[in-house]
Length: 420
Ligand code: FES
Ligand SMILES: [Fe+2]
Image 1 (tube, protein in one colour):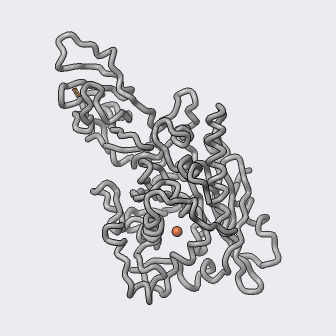
Image 2 (cartoon, rainbow, N blue to C red; image 1 turned 90 degrees about the horizontal axis):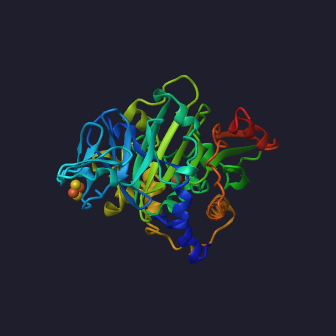
Image 3 (cartoon, rainbow, N blue to C red; image 1 turned 30 degrees about the horizontal axis):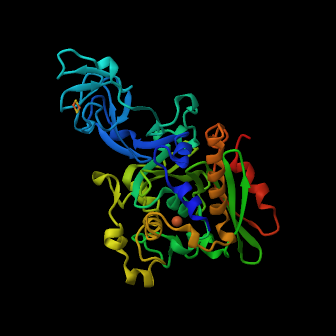
């Protein structure tokens, strides 16, 4: 459990909050690059860490990220015209370049554009994603450098979806390994109801023992499950501060790592980024078909036209089907990621962690909270937070079945930190 004060500290992310200050020290995955497909295309609204922003790609192809509201009289620049290397407000015609500098004022006979600057943030494109940095310029870290951001387009898949609860709830739901073979269990083989098959080692293994190794970037963690009398199933994950998980692909797939970022829109909503990639020269992704074929149901529940919201959501109770729950899947909800969202959203937008009862299976969650609270303090004291340096660059997540008498760490570690 947490005190109410710590719960508030970790969940409130707006400008000027301690956690908001910490999260602003990282590059934030913000948009898929195809949301701004070409120079001078339509601008896009986005909300990050409680701030309303507008993104545009100028005539030269560069990305601008500005405060959504025009500095003149505060209407939305999203209504604006994207023209000749600047975004022009349609109300009185003030125009802004990607740095936020006002460069023209159509309604003023004697212009004072050089005195007006909209709030702006840095952006870059990597791994098919537009990333935004909202912190102090002097503290800007190097560009994100996960192995998945270095993978070629055909070697990776990236999607995103809105989740209707606080970012920490979504993060904790994702890094929790003990729920996975329970909540996501498929009771029988049916491609229309994807889940972890009942004969999978993940389900066949006993309840896990969790181990957490703290690192420079966050921690490595492991779920170790006894598998019959002679074997063990070992899953190795990483948590990279502040919002990233790397997890094994599972089911005998040894050349991929999967993962998520859980990024706050504001205190009550977040974006779940879902990605996977291979480090081998092969195709992992062929769009929606590939996503569905992966069995994870990543793509099918995402309504891209409606702001990347979930088709199955709280308003329709995630379309839970009680007859499916009896015979097909443990949850009766279609899609692994939708199952996760249902569980996390049903806790309420910000769960009251002072009421919970945690056990040893929740160790990863407990340590993540501690590291986040410590990092808040580090930033307050003028230091650099973990995960903003190069220590996460080469991580991978893997799983394996081993004889029960061997040291699983010896087998997992070299592959989880290749090249180290
Ligand atoms: S409100 Fe934008 S130019 Fe007047
Ligand atoms: Fe899950």
